[in-house]
Length: 201
Image (cartoon, rainbow, N blue to C red; front, side):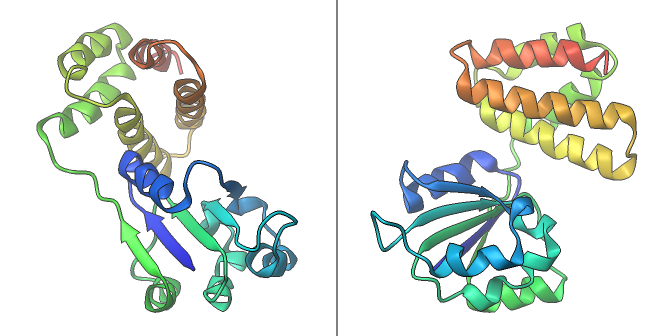
């Protein structure tokens, strides 16, 4: 069974992925897959289990492989494909929607939603001021969700203008995301450090 999860609310998506796949699953980067990897990935077993639990990230960036996904919709394995964004107008989207469950995790529109983008915009000019603004929403905001919102804004910025500054911001956000997941440091301190660094990108 293949499920497609997409959308900017990465926190809710990750919770759902954990519900479906549990805590111990294979993670595969979609961009690294080759066409000849697909039969063993979707139809092959392992030495220890007949059913595999697999998370594939950003498969749509690998167009040649992504277009073959419907051919493997009958996989015996438990597979979740997680995409930050899918073009819902494309023929490919319509093809997978008819054969697989597609769930769009849309970010809720709350009071702090626009403040996140304001903080990100201000941080590009004045990191210290952005940190002051952050203090207002820290008590009610989830750090991972906040970072997810900044990632979505950085991706939009990069799509609009693919400059050095936009690339650096995405790299720094990627590092921040990894640090939040692996470090024992208070996540908000890591976010504050990122906002300060963003000014010099």
